[in-house]
Length: 393
Image 1 (cartoon, rainbow, N blue to C red):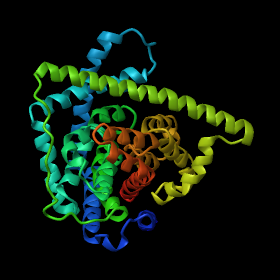
Image 2: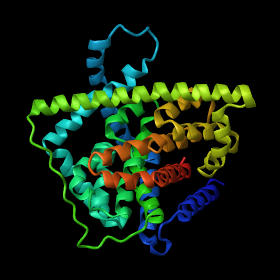
Image 3: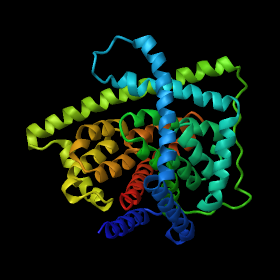
Image 4: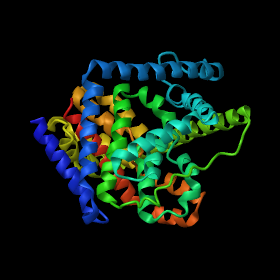
């Protein structure tokens, strides 16, 4: 049965992407098929083999160690402020971002990270049917961050046509920043975080091939990266420490606002209509949950969590999932976990538009115009990744 649902899920996801395609005649089906096979192979390897288990455990243990290191700094500053036995989300899940950001800064400073990103990007460009710039940007966005990645390609950004600009922005919204991966691992099973990072990369390429197909001519396929101004080691440390802290505080502020807002809206809807806003959205998203492979008995609850991610952000949705995970099957928890690991929400439109505006106002206006299409495509990426995992669980 799950194989039939898998085929149905793929068909509906591709159909929804096909509906908004900018040039259906130019869709390249060969790279789509190749990447779909790669996704299925990698998903089986990561979730159903002993080697995959060892690999994921290694990554999980690495982040666990990093979070322990980060905790030493957090405890030094904030130790004793929380009540014993309680989970202080800001301290345990968000402030470790500061330390992870510092590690990224060090790898950037010594040119290790750019070398890795460029190498993986060039390798991906051989199989995804897209340009070198698009492949680099997808990998870089998953490591550096959805806003910061545009700085590294700012010399090319101003001259990009609309179709290539869409692909760069879509990659930024479909992935997640490595600086907050550790925070995700405190809320959902690390194996799903790692699997989602891999799947979303290819799902993003697949959906872009359908929604925004085009061909990059060889003379246009040039990757020129913007080199950062030379800083001393300690200047760099100070900059990335503040960047990490800014990210942590920003996420905390968004959580406060979104959680309070969704609670208020739920209260208003419940008092007037006798049903919460989240439950109402759950009915809208429940068919999508079903085609991803979630059992019919749990698709309403799953739909509520999926819709929460879209209208708020992935952190709020992960917190909601953690509250009901014990009442859901492991299959549902796994599929939902994969779906939640991305930046596909309304606030990301503003973040990406803001990042491009700091470089080129004209291009930022272009980004704002296709903002909803970006979110639509990024949501399809999450649905595709969840569908692929659904057939393996």
